[in-house]
Length: 66
Image: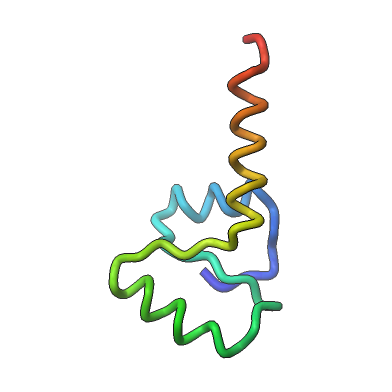
């Protein structure tokens, strides 16, 4: 998925919809063919800072009394 959104909700929605990659439009344009090749080879590609934020959010949800 090529997008401008850094929203955790959008990343999760993309994953749920089957996305194997998530590239922000502000990323270096030279990364696009690398990301396409990686995803085509079966490698998931997501921006590390978004994955960290998702992990933190998931951790907070798991720690919250329920």
